[in-house]
Image (tube, rainbow, N blue to C red; front, side, top):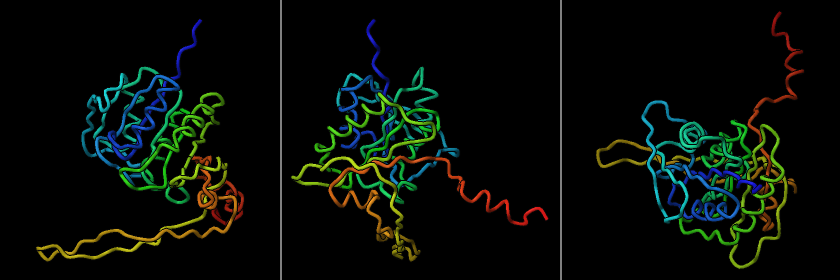
Length: 259
């Protein structure tokens, strides 16, 4: 009996026509039957937002003429996954991959990332999921060096699965000619964005603000994603969406909360 191919859902936050997702689609087609549900326009920085105050529309697409099912969605990355599971696919996929994002989603950026929120949404549904990002924000970013590792990591997840509640966050450093040194399984660095707001005035005299800022790595550890990315390694961080600070439960139970 011929074993059926795994069903793979592909999504992102840069939009269905972005170079990163087109690369990801081609690599996933080498591993299984691919279905694409992705935003119809860029949705970077949307985090885990969902649409509750507007309609959602799905539209069939043929971006590259590939013989796969592609659908664009007017909503957020999390919306895309929800609609894919509930309206597009007849059964849950064996794997969900999100990306390849144009820009880093290492350390604290995972909180704001639409790419990772799409992967997390699939993880909430019990689907093994991976978010892929390249540390290059250019719309013309070169994803060729990442292809082999994207396929390799996805294949490992298909073969081994992931524990319930765990999603993989994979970041590729931007490189020119040197190959990646390998993959490092590591932890999320403690870092932050030092925000600044550029205050401007429009022609009507009304003030408005433009968010800017600088990334600040507060972590000197040599076991973090930021450390290994700087060493030209691919960082792989297992993340969880249970935000409970379990180590604080007993301490809080010792407070005089009910007296």
